[in-house]
Amino acid sequence: MSENQDRKRTARERLQQEREQHKAREKRRRVLIVSAAVVAVLGLAAVVGVIAANSGTKKDSGSQAGPLLAPAGVQGKDRLAIPVGADDAPSTLTIWEDFRCPVCAQFENLFRDTIHELVAAGQIKVEYHLATIIDGNMGGSGSLRAANAAACAQDVGDFAPYHDVLFQNQPPEPDDAFGNNDRLIELAGKVEGLDTPGFRSCVEDGKHDSWVAKSNTAFQNGGFRGTPTVLLNGESVFPAKGSEQISPANLKKWVTEANKGKKPGTQQSAPAPSPSS
Image 1 (cartoon, helix red, strand yellow):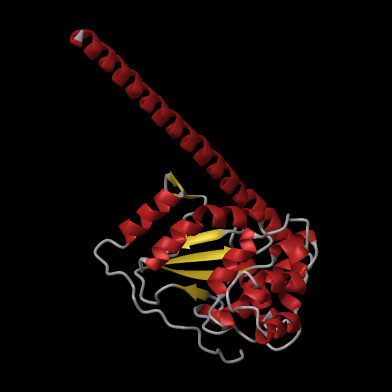
Image 2: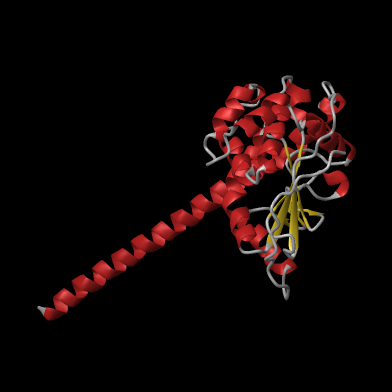
């Protein structure tokens, strides 16, 4: 009787093991399918970006009138980079984006948690650069209006969360919903403490429009293929770095390799008012 029970138990254990192995194989298969789909979508950005970048001059926002007022705390060449993370982080991730760009939203939604994790650990500083190529390609002003609103959020130290909110609530590419300042102010309500009279005034007055236009001109003159353009320590990682396709896991690996033997960053400066350019 005991021997029979042992055989039954062994059979149940073997069946359970086979089920777990099947589940593991199915999980790996789903991951591979999703990863392949993501790579395919992101790979299209090279082609889509070329079209958008080339046709973005149709309604070039580089001719915006008004004084060039940079947001608080911007850095880099011509003070066009919005920094997020420790200033002394051992690696820098440079990202050129357009808030109306659907592939930018796909990139952000896939890599957001990874980038936040690397920033919080002091492994990278992110330098965001804003472009308005979709306005030129599709018409409208949503790229410019959203970029100005994001610059207004930077003035009070809320660029990062507002940046995420914009991409999480991005309208379809042909829909110029971001061209409506009221919509941008409404979304600011999702960031605690951001919707203030000062922020509203900054958005409605287009305070940083000319700075955004200058950033877009730098993008157009930079020889980039399209948005998003992603550089790790100056080396392009999009859509591939060497023989490896970009993925959250690979981004972590590349940062770890670049930071080997280096201390995490700890010095993070709050945005300070920038002089007019």
